[in-house]
Image (cartoon, rainbow, N blue to C red; front, side, top):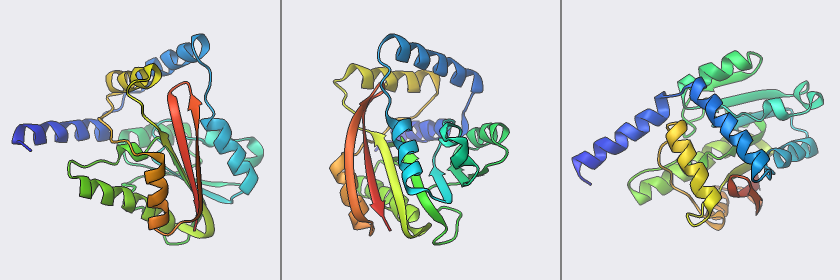
Length: 232
Protein backbone atom coordinates (compact mmCIF):
# COMPACT_ATOMS: atom_id res chain seq x y z
CA UNK A 1 0.00 0.00 0.00
CA UNK A 2 1.36 3.43 -0.96
CA UNK A 3 1.95 6.22 1.56
CA UNK A 4 -0.72 8.25 -0.24
CA UNK A 5 -3.31 5.50 0.20
CA UNK A 6 -2.33 5.06 3.85
CA UNK A 7 -2.77 8.77 4.56
CA UNK A 8 -6.15 8.71 2.79
CA UNK A 9 -7.35 5.79 4.93
CA UNK A 10 -6.10 7.50 8.10
CA UNK A 11 -8.01 10.63 7.11
CA UNK A 12 -11.23 8.68 6.59
CA UNK A 13 -10.85 6.96 9.97
CA UNK A 14 -10.16 10.30 11.65
CA UNK A 15 -13.30 11.81 10.10
CA UNK A 16 -15.40 8.87 11.22
CA UNK A 17 -14.12 9.00 14.79
CA UNK A 18 -14.22 12.74 15.41
CA UNK A 19 -16.72 14.47 13.11
CA UNK A 20 -20.38 14.64 14.04
CA UNK A 21 -22.89 17.36 13.32
CA UNK A 22 -26.36 17.33 14.89
CA UNK A 23 -27.43 19.66 12.07
CA UNK A 24 -26.39 17.15 9.40
CA UNK A 25 -27.97 14.36 11.39
CA UNK A 26 -31.32 16.19 11.43
CA UNK A 27 -31.13 16.57 7.65
CA UNK A 28 -30.50 12.85 7.38
CA UNK A 29 -33.46 12.09 9.68
CA UNK A 30 -35.72 14.24 7.49
CA UNK A 31 -34.62 12.43 4.30
CA UNK A 32 -34.99 9.08 6.03
CA UNK A 33 -38.54 9.88 7.12
CA UNK A 34 -39.41 11.15 3.63
CA UNK A 35 -38.07 7.99 2.01
CA UNK A 36 -39.93 5.73 4.48
CA UNK A 37 -43.24 7.52 3.89
CA UNK A 38 -43.02 7.80 0.11
CA UNK A 39 -41.16 4.70 -1.00
CA UNK A 40 -40.73 1.92 1.52
CA UNK A 41 -41.72 1.89 5.21
CA UNK A 42 -40.35 -1.55 6.08
CA UNK A 43 -37.97 -1.58 9.01
CA UNK A 44 -38.16 -4.60 11.29
CA UNK A 45 -34.97 -3.86 13.23
CA UNK A 46 -36.57 -1.90 16.04
CA UNK A 47 -39.54 -4.21 16.36
CA UNK A 48 -37.33 -7.29 16.45
CA UNK A 49 -35.05 -5.93 19.18
CA UNK A 50 -37.96 -4.71 21.32
CA UNK A 51 -39.72 -8.05 20.97
CA UNK A 52 -36.57 -9.97 21.86
CA UNK A 53 -35.77 -7.82 24.92
CA UNK A 54 -39.38 -8.15 26.08
CA UNK A 55 -39.07 -11.91 25.75
CA UNK A 56 -35.82 -12.48 27.67
CA UNK A 57 -36.40 -9.64 30.22
CA UNK A 58 -32.76 -8.74 31.00
CA UNK A 59 -31.93 -6.58 34.02
CA UNK A 60 -28.83 -5.05 32.43
CA UNK A 61 -28.17 -4.21 28.78
CA UNK A 62 -25.08 -3.03 26.91
CA UNK A 63 -25.59 -1.47 23.49
CA UNK A 64 -22.27 -1.45 21.64
CA UNK A 65 -21.74 1.29 19.07
CA UNK A 66 -25.13 2.96 19.19
CA UNK A 67 -24.13 5.96 17.11
CA UNK A 68 -26.87 8.58 17.61
CA UNK A 69 -29.64 6.02 17.27
CA UNK A 70 -29.79 4.02 20.53
CA UNK A 71 -32.63 1.58 21.17
CA UNK A 72 -33.46 2.82 24.66
CA UNK A 73 -36.10 5.47 23.74
CA UNK A 74 -38.02 2.89 21.69
CA UNK A 75 -38.41 0.48 24.58
CA UNK A 76 -41.72 0.48 26.49
CA UNK A 77 -41.65 2.43 29.76
CA UNK A 78 -42.32 -0.81 31.65
CA UNK A 79 -38.98 -2.13 30.35
CA UNK A 80 -37.05 1.12 30.75
CA UNK A 81 -37.95 1.41 34.42
CA UNK A 82 -36.53 -2.03 35.21
CA UNK A 83 -33.33 -1.76 33.20
CA UNK A 84 -29.75 -0.73 33.79
CA UNK A 85 -28.95 0.51 30.31
CA UNK A 86 -25.36 1.08 29.17
CA UNK A 87 -24.01 2.44 25.87
CA UNK A 88 -20.44 2.17 24.62
CA UNK A 89 -19.73 4.43 21.63
CA UNK A 90 -16.33 5.16 20.05
CA UNK A 91 -17.12 8.64 18.74
CA UNK A 92 -16.77 11.19 21.55
CA UNK A 93 -18.89 13.83 19.82
CA UNK A 94 -21.74 11.35 19.46
CA UNK A 95 -21.29 10.42 23.13
CA UNK A 96 -21.67 14.07 24.17
CA UNK A 97 -24.79 14.33 22.00
CA UNK A 98 -26.30 11.22 23.63
CA UNK A 99 -25.38 12.31 27.16
CA UNK A 100 -27.40 15.48 26.68
CA UNK A 101 -30.40 13.55 25.35
CA UNK A 102 -30.29 10.71 27.90
CA UNK A 103 -28.60 11.89 31.12
CA UNK A 104 -30.03 8.90 33.00
CA UNK A 105 -28.13 6.34 30.90
CA UNK A 106 -24.60 5.07 31.54
CA UNK A 107 -22.80 6.20 28.38
CA UNK A 108 -19.04 5.93 27.84
CA UNK A 109 -16.67 6.71 25.00
CA UNK A 110 -14.51 3.67 24.35
CA UNK A 111 -13.27 1.22 21.73
CA UNK A 112 -15.51 -1.85 21.42
CA UNK A 113 -12.43 -4.06 21.01
CA UNK A 114 -11.52 -3.45 24.66
CA UNK A 115 -14.76 -2.80 26.54
CA UNK A 116 -14.35 -0.93 29.87
CA UNK A 117 -16.45 -3.38 31.89
CA UNK A 118 -15.76 -6.30 34.22
CA UNK A 119 -16.26 -9.91 33.22
CA UNK A 120 -19.77 -11.38 33.58
CA UNK A 121 -21.43 -7.99 33.91
CA UNK A 122 -24.45 -7.89 31.55
CA UNK A 123 -27.50 -10.04 30.87
CA UNK A 124 -27.77 -8.87 27.27
CA UNK A 125 -25.29 -7.30 24.83
CA UNK A 126 -26.26 -6.18 21.34
CA UNK A 127 -25.14 -4.10 18.37
CA UNK A 128 -26.88 -2.95 15.22
CA UNK A 129 -25.09 -1.76 12.09
CA UNK A 130 -21.69 -1.77 13.82
CA UNK A 131 -19.89 -4.88 12.64
CA UNK A 132 -19.16 -3.58 9.13
CA UNK A 133 -17.24 -0.63 10.64
CA UNK A 134 -14.61 -2.99 12.04
CA UNK A 135 -12.02 -2.86 9.30
CA UNK A 136 -8.33 -3.08 8.47
CA UNK A 137 -6.35 -3.01 5.24
CA UNK A 138 -4.81 -6.35 6.23
CA UNK A 139 -7.40 -9.18 5.85
CA UNK A 140 -5.94 -11.23 8.72
CA UNK A 141 -5.91 -8.24 11.07
CA UNK A 142 -9.45 -7.38 9.97
CA UNK A 143 -10.63 -10.89 10.83
CA UNK A 144 -8.87 -10.76 14.20
CA UNK A 145 -10.48 -7.40 15.02
CA UNK A 146 -13.92 -8.81 14.25
CA UNK A 147 -13.20 -11.82 16.46
CA UNK A 148 -11.94 -9.51 19.22
CA UNK A 149 -15.17 -7.53 18.98
CA UNK A 150 -17.15 -10.73 19.61
CA UNK A 151 -14.77 -11.96 22.32
CA UNK A 152 -15.26 -8.73 24.25
CA UNK A 153 -19.04 -8.97 23.89
CA UNK A 154 -18.89 -12.50 25.27
CA UNK A 155 -16.46 -11.61 28.08
CA UNK A 156 -18.73 -8.97 29.61
CA UNK A 157 -21.80 -11.22 29.41
CA UNK A 158 -22.96 -13.20 32.42
CA UNK A 159 -23.11 -16.98 32.10
CA UNK A 160 -26.27 -17.75 30.16
CA UNK A 161 -26.41 -14.19 28.81
CA UNK A 162 -27.24 -13.41 25.18
CA UNK A 163 -25.44 -11.54 22.44
CA UNK A 164 -27.40 -10.18 19.48
CA UNK A 165 -25.56 -8.80 16.45
CA UNK A 166 -27.52 -7.13 13.67
CA UNK A 167 -25.95 -5.68 10.54
CA UNK A 168 -26.37 -4.79 6.89
CA UNK A 169 -26.31 -7.55 4.30
CA UNK A 170 -24.94 -5.27 1.60
CA UNK A 171 -25.87 -5.90 -2.03
CA UNK A 172 -24.23 -3.32 -4.34
CA UNK A 173 -26.75 -4.14 -7.08
CA UNK A 174 -29.74 -3.14 -4.94
CA UNK A 175 -31.00 0.42 -5.23
CA UNK A 176 -31.83 0.77 -1.51
CA UNK A 177 -28.38 -0.37 -0.45
CA UNK A 178 -26.64 2.06 -2.82
CA UNK A 179 -28.93 4.95 -1.80
CA UNK A 180 -28.32 4.63 1.93
CA UNK A 181 -24.63 4.08 1.41
CA UNK A 182 -24.38 7.37 -0.46
CA UNK A 183 -26.52 9.27 2.04
CA UNK A 184 -24.45 8.06 4.98
CA UNK A 185 -21.19 9.03 3.31
CA UNK A 186 -22.31 12.42 1.98
CA UNK A 187 -24.49 13.68 4.83
CA UNK A 188 -23.02 11.98 7.90
CA UNK A 189 -19.35 11.84 6.82
CA UNK A 190 -19.33 8.09 7.36
CA UNK A 191 -16.28 6.06 6.33
CA UNK A 192 -15.89 3.11 3.99
CA UNK A 193 -17.11 -0.25 5.24
CA UNK A 194 -16.21 -3.92 5.17
CA UNK A 195 -19.23 -6.19 5.07
CA UNK A 196 -19.37 -9.78 6.25
CA UNK A 197 -21.68 -12.56 5.11
CA UNK A 198 -24.22 -13.83 7.65
CA UNK A 199 -22.84 -17.37 7.63
CA UNK A 200 -19.31 -16.04 8.16
CA UNK A 201 -20.38 -14.04 11.21
CA UNK A 202 -22.26 -17.01 12.63
CA UNK A 203 -19.06 -19.04 12.35
CA UNK A 204 -17.22 -16.24 14.18
CA UNK A 205 -19.78 -16.56 16.99
CA UNK A 206 -19.04 -20.28 17.35
CA UNK A 207 -15.29 -19.69 17.10
CA UNK A 208 -15.23 -17.38 20.14
CA UNK A 209 -17.38 -19.74 22.20
CA UNK A 210 -21.00 -18.69 21.79
CA UNK A 211 -23.50 -21.55 22.07
CA UNK A 212 -26.92 -22.22 20.59
CA UNK A 213 -26.26 -19.77 17.76
CA UNK A 214 -28.99 -19.01 15.26
CA UNK A 215 -29.42 -16.47 12.50
CA UNK A 216 -31.83 -15.10 9.95
CA UNK A 217 -32.37 -12.08 7.74
CA UNK A 218 -35.12 -9.63 6.81
CA UNK A 219 -35.73 -6.79 4.39
CA UNK A 220 -35.88 -3.17 5.55
CA UNK A 221 -36.21 0.24 3.90
CA UNK A 222 -32.41 0.46 4.10
CA UNK A 223 -31.88 -2.90 2.42
CA UNK A 224 -31.35 -6.44 3.68
CA UNK A 225 -30.38 -7.00 7.31
CA UNK A 226 -29.26 -10.12 9.13
CA UNK A 227 -29.03 -11.04 12.79
CA UNK A 228 -27.01 -13.55 14.80
CA UNK A 229 -27.91 -14.64 18.32
CA UNK A 230 -25.62 -16.58 20.63
CA UNK A 231 -25.55 -17.62 24.29
CA UNK A 232 -22.58 -17.54 26.63
